[in-house]
Length: 288
Image (cartoon, rainbow, N blue to C red; front, side):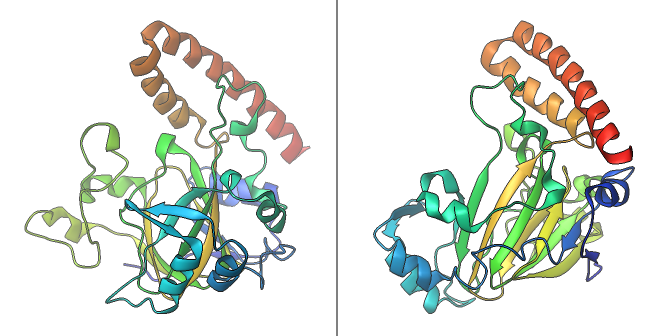
């Protein structure tokens, strides 16, 4: 397994699109995209415990206050990790927190999921918060649902990531059915090779993400992480020309199950046209 991923600073949207979206998307770490964020140097587990201590969160079926979570994070260890708050929508937290994590990195725009022309009543862009202690880990190797890209922005602490490209899918044992974007392997650091022998052939990349850095994980790339220290991050998912076809297929497959094939067929045609429109507009913006 290789031990690093490309790191860049002062990267334009044009260079990002040319170098990391087309023709072969690949992960990237932006080292300076969060330099104007108020959250840097401000957000810590203790900060959340002091200012939002009465907020209740539920983690793996356990309901607790943020004050209690912060206390457990202080003594978290690999042997006894604190509960890991993950995928918590920022829209459900006080609005002041959103002000601390803007503007978003330029490379996220344009995010086609934010289009007013998108045929969904609910936004499919998820701006999420993660707070964990040393030794905690994301519970499953996965790629983001609907084949969206992931941008993971580290605000405090340090994480270790594992990523595997889509061509390694056969080696990571996807779950059957609707959870096919998640691996059956419970612990990739200590895999059961008797149950999952092909995982020994999986070729991925292992690296660290530090405070102030942004990780881009392209659509369909398997990834997971564990905390090397107490850590706080936020993430945003997105869609653009590079992943629109795969996103459209996933979205319409789900829609067919919920609303029927006719609705899914009409929506697929509409999304295809919408993608063509936005591809043309993006081309003009990037290459004029």
